[in-house]
Structure formats: structure tokens, C-alpha cells
Image 1 (tube, chains in turn green, yellow):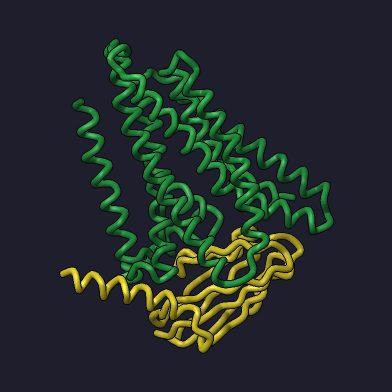
Image 2 (spheres, helix red, strand yellow):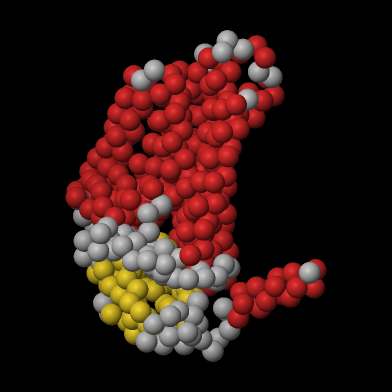
Amino acid sequence: MGNAFFVVWRESLEAFLIAGILYAWLQANDDSGAGRRALFGGLAAGVGLALLLGWALLSVQDELTGEALDLFQTATLLVAAGLITQMVLWMRKHGRTIKAQLHADLSAAAERSGYWGVAVVAALAVAREGAETVIFLYGLAQGGELSALAIGSALGFAAAALTAWLAARSLARLNLGLLLRLSSILLLVLASALFVTAIDRLIGAGWLPPMLDPVWDTSLLIDDATTTGKLFSDFAGYRARPALTTLLAWAAYWTVVFIGWRKSGRG
Amino acid sequence: MKHALHSAVFGLFLASTAAFADDLPTYKVLMKDGRIFPDTLEVPANTRFRLEVKNEGPGAAEFESLELKKELVLAPGVTRTMVFVPMKPGIYKFFDDFHLETGQAKIVVK
């Protein structure tokens, strides 16, 4: 039961966190409620996608379909990382506009596209890890000790929701400027982790050369094959033994983000 | 320049189709009840190879390795294969992400 609890907590935390941070931000910045509706619509669509992807992963047997599915998952990682980053920069601009009482100047089209971004990001966040949770739960159902495991996973869901709710609540308590900056940084760190995972998967599939691999080994400090280290790698993109390609991609990501951040702050 | 790009794309295509060639050496890993057998697998260095992973259950398993850059979710009773790119000699850890406490193993590349 303890294991079911932990796995479900970790797998669903990312989606809950993204949803919680977005919710806190929308609550502070969007009076119309359109943004929150987009968020919940996206979350619902994500559950549907997760079930679909979970079913696809269950029924796949042969290598070719497996590789295609792998590539699809890598693509969703890249899209999610890109969209979150773009959305954070949009949020930064949008938040400043509102603060400067220039709400009327914001075109309806820009607002709509921003909410579309919110919905798609929410859907992808749920679908990605949700598909793995679907398989994990399916495995439990096949397994026997149903009730103990079901309680464990229900508690895991609840704990993830609670974790995200606490994060969103504490974010909402802050003043608007700090809320915007902190939630942006959290989302960007998450996006960088998704990007690093995508690059690693491309290397693992032979689509990208690793160049020097590994550049260093910090597994004595934090081992990414342990419970805590795995959390670090899932949420912050930590690698104990990174390949040079992964490192360069990570550095390039933060360079682009830094330039975009400076630009959107000035506008 | 254009020619170089073409051959690079063609090379990638070749590399990806070569992955499906049947003459690859195949190694087997069994995942069972949160444990991995064998816990040490030896493979030759600088050689492309195929790994056949079977999850006997009960419960789902997730073959994962950050060092090998692979991730594969397996429902109980499912067998899947992965192709690994040629690797340098060394020890590469992998684990069952659904059972981190018990499911740890390594691939030794020689």
C-alpha cells in the first residue's frame, strides 16, 4: 500500500502542481473566469487523453509500434516544455499589463490564444503522467490485493492534490509581483525538466548523438536512481551523469528563457 | 551544404532502420514482483543490441534508466523490446520506477 501511495502521489503531482500554479495565477489576474474554465476544460481533456494513451501503451506489443509510441511521447514532452515556457512569458507580459491598468489595450485575440495555451498545457500535463498512472492502476487491478492497493492510490491522489493546493494557497497569499515571479520560476524549472527528459529520450533512441557521455558523475552526492534523487530528476531535470548534448540543451534552454524574460519584462 | 544535409538525413534514416534488423544480439530481463532478474547483465561495448523486457507481474512495472536514457512502462504479462545504441564500457544502472526500493539492477558494458 505504501508503494502504491508513493507512486500515485509522484505520478500525479506534476499535473496537480501545474494546475494549482495556473489556478493561483488566474485567480489573481483574470476576473472573467474564462481562464479558469479553460484550465478545467484542459484538465478534463487530459484525463481522456491519459486513458487513451494508457490503452495504447497496454495494447502495443511489437517493436515498430513501440518505437512510434515512444517518439510520440517524446514529442508531447517537447510540446509541453515549449508551451509552458511560452505561456510563462505570456503571463509575465499579461500580468504587467493588468498591473499597469491597461487591461483594455489587451486585444481579445491575444487573450484567447493565451487561454488556449493554458488549456493545452493542462491537458498535456495530465495526459503524460496520467497514462503511466493508468497502467499502474491497471496492474493493481490485475494483481489481487485490490482494496489495500486501491486505498493507497486514492490516498496518493489526495496527497498530490493537497500538496498542489497548499502550494497554490501559499502562492496566492503573496503579493501579485512575487506570485507572478515565483510561479513563473516553478513552471520554468518544470519545463526545463521535461525538455531534458525529451533530449535524453532522443539520445537513447539514437536520434541525437550524446557526444561526451557522461561529462561528470555526481551519483555519490545525489543518486538519481533513488527515491529522492528521482524526484529531483523528475521535477528539476537533475542528472547524476549527464551527457554533453543534454547539458548543452539545458544551457540553451535557460539562455533562451533568460533572453525572453528580459524582453517580456521591458514590453 | 545541401548535399551534406541530405546524407545526414539519410544516415539518420539508415541508423533508425538498422534498429529493426534481425541480426542484433538479444538480451533478456525479467521483472517480477518489484524485482529484476538478473540484477547484473553483461553486454559487449560499442555494439548495438536489443533488450527484451518481460514483466511477469503482479502489478505494472516501469523499466527506467537515466544513464541509459530509456523508459518503458509494462503492464503485467507484457513483453516489450528496446534497441540500445552502442555504448562505452562502464556500469549503467537501471531500475523499476514503480518499485524503487527493491527493483535495482545494472548493465555492465565490457
